[in-house]
Image (cartoon, rainbow, N blue to C red; front, side, top):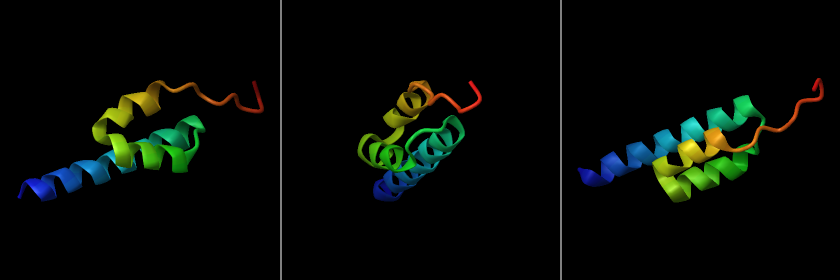
Length: 57
């Protein structure tokens, strides 16, 4: 039972980090790997990581 809970948390973390990286212009593959390794701890790291400057800036 605990294994399924950890699996759900890990998959959720991966999805959330992917979405954050997509919106903020980060490297999606990097944040998928980071979320797989760090789990929920990667979410604030992805959110507070520096944003790539856009071409319009």
